[in-house]
Image (cartoon, rainbow, N blue to C red; front, side):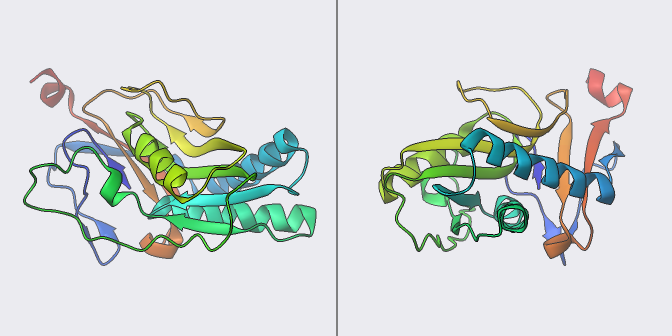
Length: 207
């Protein structure tokens, strides 16, 4: 996922990100091995905070949040020897940046085939930025059921919050500028695991 203030729907062709601005410099900040270590650590943190997986359910925000959720759930199952319910949440209809847009995104399916009532939900996304995606996800979850509690897990927290939202579990905090971009690549859709920081050249940053 590339998350920028002006480009909420990044262009992807065949799983490859196409950047319209060729002045951006791309730096890998998490490689494949680091990605896996981060997933492992986050799964352990979730279990420690919740004292096991007995009352847990995991919900990922489409698209990369969904794949990340399934990886976290697989690691939790490996540790606890017990499967954790995993669901997928589409927040398109709850977003606040679509009003008046002609290029409306395609609706996708929400798959939560279990009761949220009285459960501890771990909500998962790849990048936490302004907080508006998470706000939409919280509204969508509350329309589905009333969980005992909701915890937020993100792979990358890049700052610049516009809403009072904070993650409970963070893979890596990355200081960024408003003009910077974070790109999360996952093998399920991108052919590799990694996280990249894209920054404009200094001359471009000044404009």
